[in-house]
Image (tube, rainbow, N blue to C red):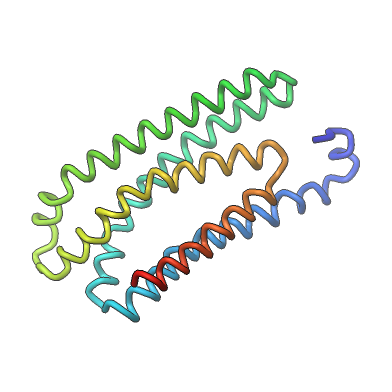
Length: 183
């Protein structure tokens, strides 16, 4: 990234970074909408209700992933700006492994307590079954979603936001295909 060029043409750099990032965020938001459409149209209202009852769990995972990622990418970006590439790589590794460890431990904890909590919170057995079927799979997938978020932050910090947008586009297309095949 050329800092002199950035200072001379700030609007073009803002657009270069913001447009792919906004598109990636919109695409990421579409995952829940697409899943909801497939589930409501092909499985039913109870399954859609079960999906929505578990969204706070997703937001806890997202909160942890984003919190750790933003902190790590801020430090690594500063190190890159100071031309300390080795330090930036170490910060990426620390951030990545800290985030992954916490998210995997959270997924394991949620998996262990999923049945007792659901039996306590949800009395409708149909809703319980849909919830457990969906979130047993999602608790395996959430750590990988957080890996995507963490790596995406670092990819953008390296000056390549369009790469993360392309990755997000591929992941969302794969999600739609898998929804179509399995739901």
